[in-house]
Length: 72
Image (tube, one colour):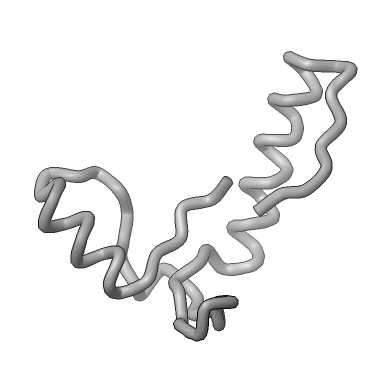
């Protein structure tokens, strides 16, 4: 699962965890309309594809009989 966030979630995270190392720089993200009627910041398609490829390779290596049903 990739980290994505809304402006409200970012504010909440920074209030609760001011020293977080989560990268929540909006300039590095793409806006995507969420199913709950809000925009959220997600990784650009190229970065998301790279993340998916990497995580898939780790899963296949460690769990050869596993079936990946979806990726988000």
